[in-house]
Image (cartoon, rainbow over the protein chains, first blue to last red):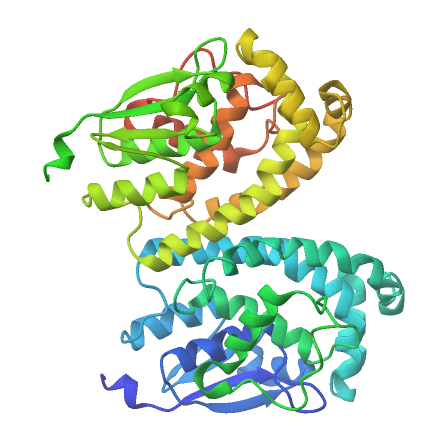
Length: 239
Length: 239
């Protein structure tokens, strides 16, 4: 390990009222750090706390500090971690990196977008009280001016399309224990991060009880690296 | 190159009335062979000719022959090619292989499925006359008993959803010249194969004239390996 490698790492994480890390993008980096066996200090922050950090330099979490290096955006942080800590690489080859970016583009468009519409009111209700007004106004603007309650009103009718859109994960998991094959890779961390996000706040189980392909993978994923993501605050993902 | 490597390679390809190779799965293997710099002899076959080959052993093309080895299914053929011809590998690492399988699962569910509904009548009309009755009855059965003409009737209203579903490709191509990054990989060949299929028979341009991200990549993709897929029988993909 080089000089830089010995410096402490800290991670600014978006937390809910109950203290649980909730951002799907932060979870990607939590898994990336665990993948590399890197310890880090957690720095909890709420939505309205982010602009108060580092003179307002960042608008989103995760924010990673490593010695003098401070950076945000999960893809940039992942690339930095592979440069600073080349052992146990997150990406075996530039083509694997490109393929996971393509997976992320699909996952954001077809899965995360649907999850937002179904869980946005649950997220609101689970955030720290001081974050709720900001969360509501920023999200209602993004959702075309609808009240969060209006967006949530038809959420049960939207669930089947989300479940169907998860089909490619099921197809992959019929062939391999992880999305990355025999071992988990960054695609697993992207997808697991989204399920952690939902499990942090959900009042509507996302998956059918019979969805054994996803259940098996989620159990394996949550168990990774000593099960650092498991805790009793997680709400059921299965009906 | 080993003993096996010196044997001739032949590829059974599904062809249309005009003689053009049309199967998206065959195109994957045409690109895979070109990627490796392997020459092959083309063996054209129509839909109803497949069961007459090799004593009815195979139901689908591509079928690859290499010396005594005869095998079908594009993923199996791709894996065989990397074993028999390890130079210029299709997959740099098992994780890249797994990621392309996941891309294929997404692409089949969200893209190919929509393309079938839009172009199935065009494909029918372009097949060899002796294949049309079989093609019609097998596809009408798969499409829930609707006549191909009924399926095609609303195809223009289905086009916007297909164009939107191609968003992940555009996002990737905003960052890299190919889906695989700086160089094309098997994900490019999967996607290019689908566009070759459509270009073989389309009477309805798939893409908007303003879709420059996809246009640039398609031009680069069709130019690969001496532009072996380009020919005057291709129909316009852009409005």
